[in-house]
Image (cartoon, rainbow, N blue to C red):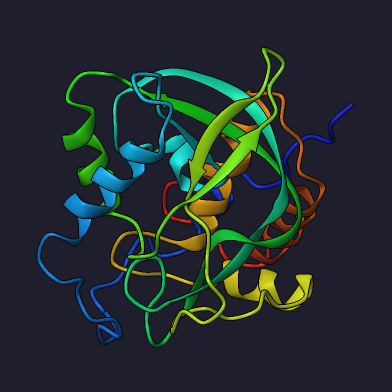
Length: 227
């Protein structure tokens, strides 16, 4: 039986919801037409007229940014969740930096596969690519209870400028319990992820350990005015 979640909305709300402080843009924008060419290449590599599946490990689970026709719990090998993208602009800032989640090489990961609605697939894929780091997606075989599906996954490259190795759990929990950006907090990001995984019956021992550590840190803060 999965241990109940310790991290709650009330604990997350003890942090400031957001800040106007933003760090510098550290990446150059891709050249014009990059996302359209990437979408064309992905569709050319897909199974022709078959469905396009996206493997979601973090925020895509609860904020897919495209119309989802079907979703399934899924497991992939060779990739693992990792808080490994330095963030000082979205859910972090220069004074309270964060670490966003991606998939890094090694291990395995259980998440969700999301099938894109077939209507205007190319435009939907371009719109999704524009919200992700400008790195070519990786094709994986995701195992589901209804059989394997071929899916793309947005994974990290260790040579990418914003990549950092994930810290040890205690140090990572310190970051996740304090990072605030103009979009929101890392604690909310973690809460949304574990809540949706829990709802889908997916238990990630590492994330469950992290959420308990983050909850303990937030419990030391004064309650928000709302209680």
